[in-house]
Length: 373
Image (cartoon, rainbow, N blue to C red; front, side, top):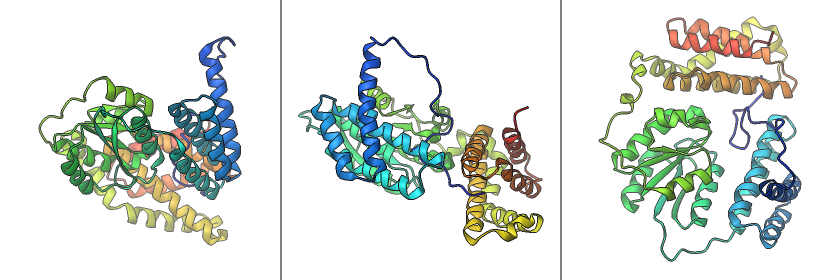
């Protein structure tokens, strides 16, 4: 196994499929095609790691009449999504992905944002603790600024205690929490309940919360939005409802009473270590692995256990199975058979024989990886 945990740039299950083509005289289609041309130009510059040319594309698009929000979301945002898709398909290295993301982040500063004479209100935007994918939150912050909000953008990996201190100091009308990795859902839940305890409503967004926002609702967020435009529109429509009385995170998730999440989470380092050692003992092919391949295998096992525990937390098999299917696709693109994931699952299940929910998740994972008949 030689993959990495998925980042925000690309989303599993959202590849370019065949779509009905509207009539050529459709105004929306013509606008999308025009915007797509600018995205293509920016892609060429980003792929060449040419920050100056990328900045020129953005400036030229603005001069040609595209509004700043369209450039932000449909040009820069579209290119960032393509970055992730290309990495997953093994057409970009991790270094190339990081360079592209850095360029996209920097050229956002070119976009004009007038200082509002009367701001709509004050919004704090932050990534949950240990969530390092900052660009989705940045896109939201800039969209809100363009629409006249005063925004406090706190960036990536904001410890919950520091977020609460900021709220007490600044008194925002709402907090927008961003998370891309489902493995951060327990930390997101902690942040949601802590922010609500201050009387401040929370809007959640990002891939971690599900394509339909199901985990945002499960964790008690006051609102959810699928993207930056929808979030800005929702916030402008009506104030978010103030949260109810403070409560514990476990009040939202009664299944945590079985202690499986807590025990498996605490045992994660041992599970990864023991599974790796058993793989070495049972599969002679690992003796030929390079040191880098051994490190990647250990990383992959750690990701598998992390997603398993996240699925236990929200009691949702799809958190685990979606990750495995996505990982299988990434492995296949790199010439590693998807079936290489199965032995690790088998060995994990042996160690989790006393945890029925965990075993059910692993069974679901194996089924998701099984070849189609």
